[in-house]
Each structure stands twice: as C-alpha cells, then as structure tokens.
Length: 192
Image 1: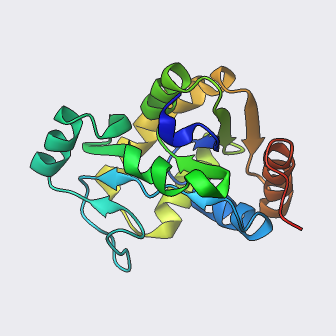
Image 2: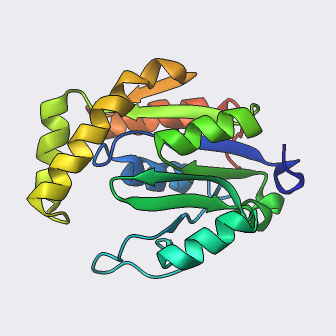
C-alpha cells in the first residue's frame, strides 16, 4: 500500500463506459459526504461542460508520459484511444477523509489489485449489452465510431466481472445505488 493511502479506505469502481458509474458515485457521495472522489488524469479532450481539475486533469500525451516516467501514477491505462490514470497526489489529497472512490478502467483496476490488494473492488454492470448501447447513444457525447470502439472494449470488461469481489447491476438506479451504498457502508459507515 502507498503511504498516501495508509489510513484510507479505497473503493475502486469499474465498469463499461455508459453503465452509469458517475451517476451512482454521485448518489453514493450524497449518502457518504466524507467520501472523497479521486479526479483521474486523461489525454482525451474535454467534453462540453467539463472542467480541468474537477472533471479530469486534462493532460497532453507528452505531459501524461512525463508523469508516468516520473512515477506519479498509482495506475494508468490506455482506453479507447486515450490514456487515463490515477495520480498519487489524488490519494494523498484524500488521506484525511478516510475514504476515496477511484472511478477507473479495467486495466487500472487490475493494477490497483496488485499494488493495493486491500482496496475494495466493485464492478458496475449493465443489465444487457443492448441497454449499454442505448445509453451510450442516448447520452449524445460520442461520435458513432467512438461508441463502437467503447462497445468493443465493453465486451472485454464484461467478461472480467467475475474478477471483482462485488458486482452491482445497474438495471434500476435506486436499487443499484442502494446496493452500492450497502457495500461501501460495510467498510466506510456514513457520517451521522
């Protein structure tokens, strides 16, 4: 375990793009206001409304590579043509909260499983591949070729769901949010 995370419960939340991870994490953090959220770094371009340092740390490919070379990432992965990663400084930032959520891709979750085996790994799954396709198309943020690329990656991700200690199927948002809350509460009780 890293020094930064020594007293911090780390919750790794993984699942295919479009499965609703961000929405579920927002609901979880409403129920656990002391639970921090690690802001990932990425080389992808910001989407409308995204803010650097809040939505993601947006880095050029050269900046990202320099941080990898300097050992500044806890995990990093290539996903759908871009790079993503969790900066060590993000875990350090949440040391005092006692808990932090990492919303990361499958490759990164596997790296965290090796480097931080005590982290709690949770996989968010769609009820079906067709539901996932509809969600990706419906959010209107990606071009059709990007949607197809994300769906191809999703096949590999869905095949890996049995690697995770916990699986939440997001077929009903309130039910899925309740299930995620119950898992996290077992390790990080909400502040009263």
